[in-house]
Length: 139
Image (cartoon, rainbow, N blue to C red):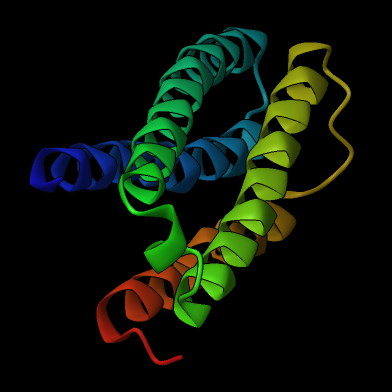
């Protein structure tokens, strides 16, 4: 079980790295004025999105494996229900990032860099809440 937990945390860190850095690239992409720079950002976004997908998928796989070790015990814990609800919203944020990569890829962005700076702060709030739930287990 400790191996599952370790890999769950490792891939959670990978997933969050992508969710932190991808919107930061959006900030710079939205500010880019020349075609060469915009094309470079498109490549970076596409490659980082792949890493983010892998981190997210493996986080889910190891998290579900942890739950399946003692399903009755884990699924009776209120903190886990709250954590899973936040993780589902985080998945929606991930999908939104995926959509934005496609928008930038077709040069369809209509938002400015300031919007992306705020958008970039969202996963920080989720990280804080999820880690606090997992460590403090308040319910």
